[in-house]
Length: 425
Image (cartoon, rainbow, N blue to C red; front, side, top):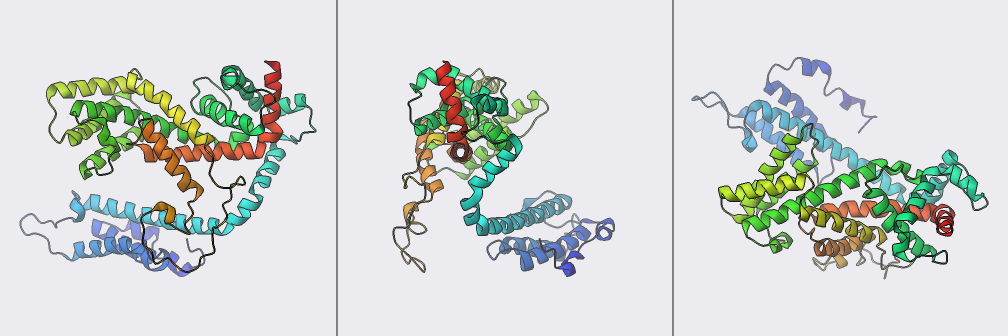
């Protein structure tokens, strides 16, 4: 984080760690690291929590031991001194990573105008260096040989979905790109069940696409389980749309989401963890202990969902595709260029306090804010209100990926391939 400050680099070395023989030794090293992080690296907004931990560690070691059992009361309700040391180290490492992210985000924000200006042309030139010149002067046969995966994807797209969209060779470029975004990208890539090589222009998005798939799967499973939890607890599904939920319900929700995102080597471990987590959520919703019959019913529904046999899961599986089609085809209400001009020049800060998102900043919603509002309504309509925030995030990620691809390659590659595919059909 500070490569030029050599005087800071010696605050910790291998000998310090090798000589640690007790948790108190580890904490002494940790205090030095935390002090430097909070006083020389972190922003004013982030530093207080680091200082709070360091003060807590110092106070812990200054307390006398209890004569009765020869141990101190450990902060934050942690069960042992060793776990407190591990948790403290993990937290300082986490804060250091956040600090590094803040620095990176600041540098990116400084470069953002330049990236916005030249980014599209830079990506197209980089793509041409790898695959060759794809200009309109290139013969179609050459273009098909140059980009075989893209050509096969377009042909499959036309075969599977062409008749349902009523598109022709005379359709506008915008209509064709909507077809690519909805049917081609969402149905043909994100949720396809067939083996298909990704189009060449998406080669840099493999990690993001896999992340979107994983998050969508977790959201569908969690939503299906939450609906069953509501039915069994007899609270009604409307509670899932409520903004005022108890800490116990929100905590159980986070645990369920975390468990579904983990990687498991054995199916049995996944099933037992999910059954326990959904049991805790159902109990929190019902505000009572569940009966034996309710627990059995909940377990059966949970196993049915995890095995892919649950009718609620199948319904939500179809609906999540509808959500992503909506997300990827969504367009801002701003000017056709996509760049909103300020309504008026403003300086200083507003003295009017408001919770209205539309009045934040300079009174103009960002594209992401605008999308989030629309996507939230759509997610609620389709039954994903409870886990809507996670779905909105990956929906926006999917929209950005395919929108950029259509902007960069829609006219010169996809439009030409679609024309040939329609003529052939």
